[in-house]
Image (cartoon, rainbow, N blue to C red; front, side, top):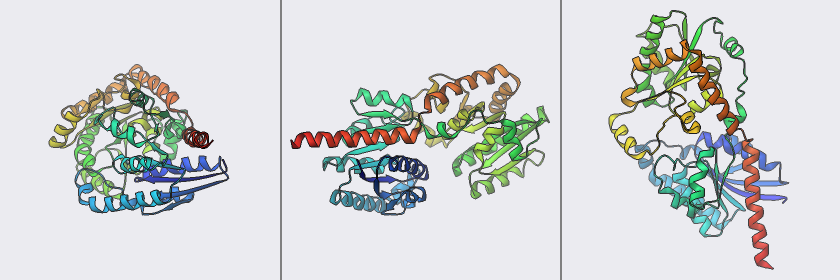
Length: 389
């Protein structure tokens, strides 16, 4: 095949990263790749003609999507109309399932080949979405191997393509080199604190993280701390809270979370994608999360998984400690971190599990995903030719 016309919609910066890598891999297999849809600057650098600014889709939580619902529906209608009137060889939705699955389903009814990259968390909650997905996609591309089973059980074509972080992060990176780059003393015990990137996460977790740090420091004055702030707003809040802890030997970083993970002996962090980065960086961890009482009441009734942390989900066992909601106290955090710092065998068991996870996820994501989509288009073209004969 010498030319591919593809429609793509990514609604978040993380999707823009995935989409850009995938488009680069597709371009290596075709003489010409024509791409339209919605994406950010990285996808646009790979040739995407964006019909709307990606930022208009980047909404989170429960309230903001409702407030923006008329605009989101208007954009979705226009995107759907564009691709119905100008059918691509393939439409690919990247994450953003609430926005993309409806487009995929309606385009597929019109005979447009449809795929989706990044499985919704159907293994954890709202499993009924699988029926909607089956109507919407010709192929689901999953980043995690455990996601394959639920699609196979529902006879939905699926491919595990690996996780891009496993390709990016070098598990052999020198901890000392990372410390040198951050200007951290070589002999110090170093603890990274990652309370999250959202305002609510910092509000609920940062005070407990700092109380935990004070307890560790009082027990061992040689300990030092790194706290990456996700953005200027989070840094301002963290700096405000730090005024209550003038004695803490803590360095606030502007971003640089991955560098902090590479440098630290252990990390205390909020449950989320950062836990996967920590595992791939070979950094022993304690995972925690806390939210409002109402949010917890809702989440605890919806989620159907025994674990919150990705390393535990991927490992299928309690590989790392989880301190969730009522268990997320400063004292419990300090005790769990102290166990990792004082018992090398406990930390080593985590590291061995992390190595297995890294090997399982390292599949050259971009090449694997591109090959799966090329095979999907080729099979559809072959079937069409067979019908034409």
